[in-house]
Image 1 (cartoon, rainbow over the protein chains, first blue to last red):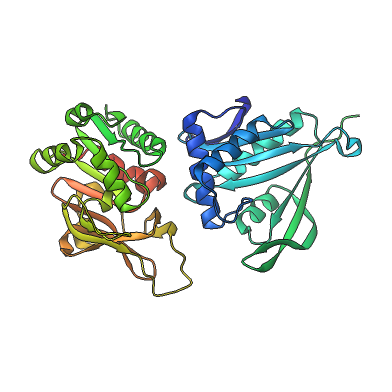
Image 2 (image 1 turned 135 degrees about the vertical axis):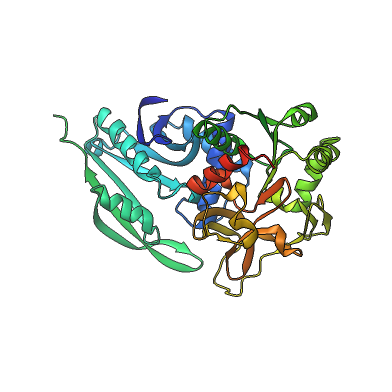
Length: 184
Length: 216
């Protein structure tokens, strides 16, 4: 872990993690599979096998410029999101970073897990000098849309051809938030 | 006292162990929680928990693969009267038979069979995954392990099969998911939940706390 954790209640908090113990890996795979099956917002529409998913999460940890944040309930990983830093060749956009892959396990919803993760990301992003965060969501991700709206994220655009789910085109919503004044 | 959560290769038991630790702490109970496949630990425990994730037959095979465990469970729970809790497929294993893919013998402690959920509304997805409202049966309304839990309280389910009960007094609660789904079973010193108490927040912690203090 690096950086402070964000505590929502005595048993719910979120933190930036740089490694996953074997138990954490099992927990994040469980949480992610359940979120996918329930339709709750991750890249997959149907969950891959556990070995493939474990590889994916190990990969997240070693990719440069990608940071993993998790929420925990009683220490058990209940959700996650990632912060993608902007590559150095995009110098004009180095003030901004992207939130992606945000999900909360169905069993943990309503407990402040999602908000704790976003707060942890915002804290980290400010520390890193970022002044703007951005993200995109499927129109079907109602809970995430409500969460980000309530946390001051502004929808600036819609992609009508964002995703294809069960043969049907689904819109994508694009959000941004200024989290601090740009460093000069 | 010690609660033994039986590890027979059926999934990740961390959230289960953490929830039992938290319930013990919140109820000021000096209870250690061990996740184990060691017969000695199970024999020495004051409470036994059988979790389970996946298919009925796979879980039964996994349990059989821990040599002597089924016999020990029978000795400790049926003959010894030790408090026992089955969770999800661990609860289903308490039935006489499971009919998931093949007919497979359960432990035979509850007079029921485990069959596929068949909701009358085709819009309802299988697996039944998410929060649902408990409806306590008469047998559940005054059960000590359900103290503080009422009809309308929510519990978290993930399953495609459920237990159909032949002896109504052994069903303590149900939920509605396009058809009536058995949520809690029990008799004597044993209780089983189709839902995951370890993921059912307040309802689950109440139930686990009651179980840890149960003296059937």
